[in-house]
Length: 181
Ligand code: IMP
Ligand code: MG
Image (cartoon, rainbow, N blue to C red; front, side, top):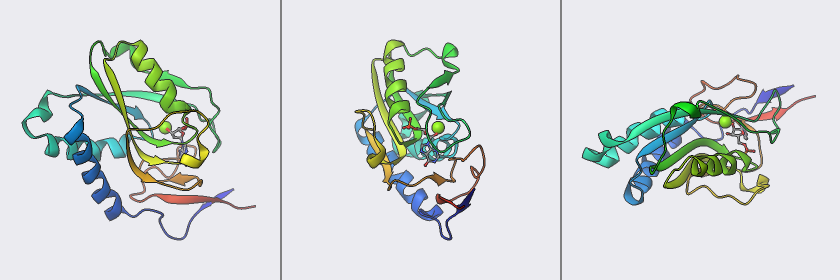
């Protein structure tokens, strides 16, 4: 069994401020063609980040595409199965496009690395990655996100789109999930 921490790890205001800054960091250095969001965990982050990006990009914003795929490697557990499944790619054309891949969290790094390789195979001209959260301590493969919202410790977190077995996603803050016996 699991229960939520007593206080949020990252509050809603802190998230809002960091996402706005992150959008400026991205807009300053990367003029991508398509923002590709990895559902489901990144849905709330993507909604907020994309609006902040549009503000930061000004007139260029409406030239950019937004697309969604669904990446999944978790069953009903807090450990990645390492077996990445990607849905929705068949409708997306990345040929010669610069891609900004947005995901919720880099944990083992397998999802990020797997998706980066896949997007390059699909003909993307360039792939840069943005994650809201990074758990560096858990990395199992050599991959780094280009843009990171927050570095966090080795804890399982939920809220702001992130789930445990599809629960907790609608919380406005990021919370730690603790195991009880
Ligand atoms: P990775 O492939 O091990 O890096 O895992 C990446 C995916 O696992 C993310 O896109 C999340 O969906 C999920 N994940 C990893 N850590 C957490 C966590 O602490 N809370 C919720 N989901 C997580
Ligand atoms: Mg995910």
